Image (tube, rainbow, N blue to C red; front, side):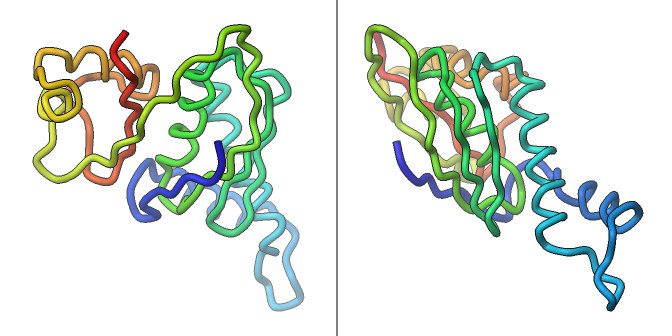
Length: 167
């Protein structure tokens, strides 16, 4: 799919914990600072844990962090799973882009979903009205973004969502 952009300052605040842990446990430079390589490895591990915690079926999942860009490798069982992995990684504060190097194992190719960045004042029904012409189609968007979304009322500006085509 390529390179996907995200708002660096929106999303789950995951990396603060990595930085705190690195300061406590990691070897330091002579100046007493944690090396960027080590910090990036710790952050990549946290990102990998997020995806694994969602239970998304991906074989050989690997995550690397290069500055503010996450590079992801692996073989997803479907196009939808691949897109969910990209969104799970991109919707983290401090991540500005995801470099998708994943493949899809599915026999029948699925159409790619559109990605939409939530704006202030948006709701799933408002987004459904804009994309599908029917606000009552919001469950389609909610289901397409599970397990990242737990509640259809809990979206935030800057979050990126999957908008699948209607069947």
